[in-house]
Image (cartoon, rainbow, N blue to C red; front, side):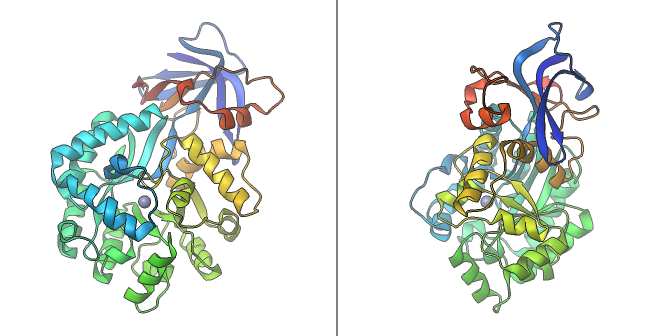
Length: 402
Ligand SMILES: [Zn+2]
């Protein structure tokens, strides 16, 4: 199949567009032809943008029905809204149905890969993994680890949680199109024993680690109370949870020492600007983190985040930088961040780019505005004028799914 249009091409931290065609066969991109946007293509045309699928590096599948609970800060929001929502995943069939729905919503917004949290329930997490595998979306889903500071119905012993996560890693091993992940919710809800065992398990299995870090001031204070005044970053480091396969949601309330330790560990921060605004958590300082050498990805953080569209999350990243008075990322860098940038940070070498050999997870976007030759840079024009209805086709592994 030949898809023609303006190709979104990744170029050293930026994106650019060039007319051309992408040939897909089976599940892969087998040829990228730059310069020729011929009418013999099966799909597309000169006014279409052909982009790699977007990647969302932080979302919570059981929270899709809890989006929009306004007026609460993190710890109250968890207690009053999120823990009740996650309790509903006691019923594995409900988790399966909800995951299917969440994946359809992601695809409809162009997200073809994600890093997701499930709940503490092993059976529900396994259902979510199976549904995601059947849907052929790419990513990781982790059973959430909590052994304290949450309702009893959502706590398990450390040994049970580690054994269950190990079973999920057997069934959905790291490196697969869909893989399990080691996912302690955050330090507050985990005993030191659980954090340590989680770190060991991730290391033994080469698994990805997802957790939250320094999202909210009250959260950071509670962590200091619970762990004898130790720093949040140091605590994770001592538990063996920081490394190149670690993705830390938020990372807002950090100091220079934290940033240096994070950079040295090669752990990444998943920046979730929409969620941070929604819960009044603060604003992540992208400029300082990048300056210290910390890798940053972008995520929606559904359901604290309310934007499924990674385009709008990327705009949130720009707005967050502006609000701090920092040099904001450009539109080209924003497009890069939600495609090749996120893929690179996750080590997904065959995703996020229109290149030969990439998996054919891609999007056909048909803007109904003149965008290729106006007074504004085309990628900036599309980013800031974005209309979800422009996204007309989504391909997963070369198969049209939307
Ligand atoms: Zn989160």
